[in-house]
Length: 317
Image (tube, rainbow, N blue to C red; front, top):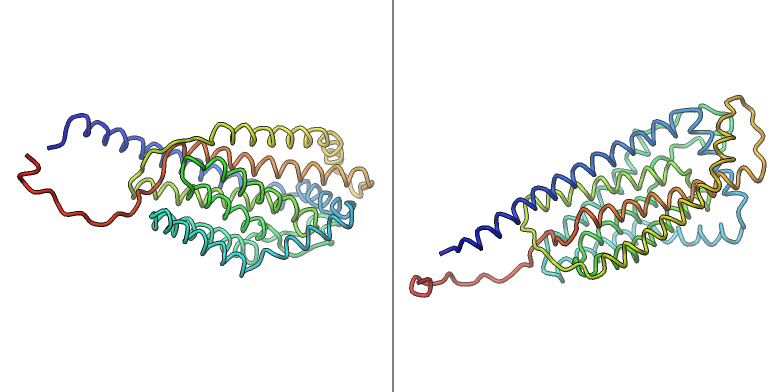
């Protein structure tokens, strides 16, 4: 016989499950919309391309040894390493006895990376709008390397137990925002490419998390590392936004001049690069903070257990 308190608890969990799923879907839709706006404003307009290219040219002003180091680091991100990480994610899901969760977030990461490659190669073209865009005419939006790092980081955050989810967000997240910055330092991508990849991956992982909440049992857990994680992430966000703001004045003044050609000084190129990198890091950190807030104390899948015999009628009495 089910007690009234048990029924109330189940009802509460059911209501929370619907609410969490709805919030995740809203976040996914908003992020996908921002990705579309980023593409339209920064890739399909003259003003956006001028900023994108100034930041790209600014990467050439950086220390050559740093660029070489970043390129070496980015070259380690390839199909083989990505496949290895996906297998690790699935294995962690099995180790936690949450097989559906592990496989689902691994699929979400795979869809994110393959989806960004598909969009970049055949859908989101880059029109030739400004003269300095001849530096790199090929489509580059969104960044595949950024998508690989971000999608794996977000997948690990969703997969991890609520008690250590904040710690995972810092460790995996720091790797992802370093990659998002390094693809720009190496001169491989423009800022719009890294920002767009971040927004797309966040949207995909939120959709998958929302489906898991709706279709799988949702357990409540502890949030031991959430508060210190929020503190660390907010500090990183604050520093990044402050540095971006310090470089924004000269960059905005440059963008205000619509006539071409505009003299691109070394200082202007460097400030455009610094602005874009710090803004990108702030966006990645924002995605991590929002995901932690949306997931809260919830574990999106209950552990798989062995089947137990049904209680007898006598024991039920």
